Length: 150
Image 1 (tube, helix red, strand yellow):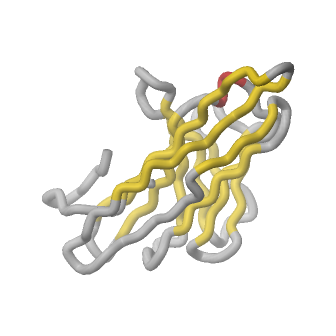
Image 2 (spheres, rainbow, N blue to C red):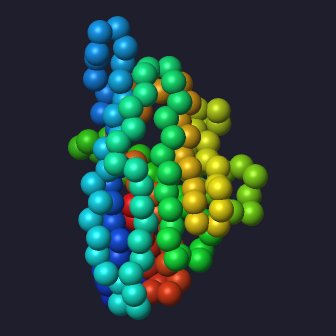
């Protein structure tokens, strides 16, 4: 799922997936990432993320997105339930103190922080079964004029 404003070129793409399962009395949320590397016309745009994250129901899940060499200083996050369409969760610019939210998403359940101009974090508080979904990190790569998803 790469949206372009010019003829399609290849970009870095990876997918993150929450899966909720029951383990004794605890609900576990597992974040799995599938990373597929593709090459951009002007070089390699690399977005990276940890492959697995497990938390218990009611705890906090954090997902990191590294924009690599992209200089847009913005990360957008999307949530997609299997069989559904992607939902825009939020976007965060490096210069902002708090994110801008999509319809149906708000603080304190969802928030975002940044550690640098290229390192962004999606934070989901009080994790529950409804958080089970594929989560995408997206930015704009102005060097090739296209969106890059993770």
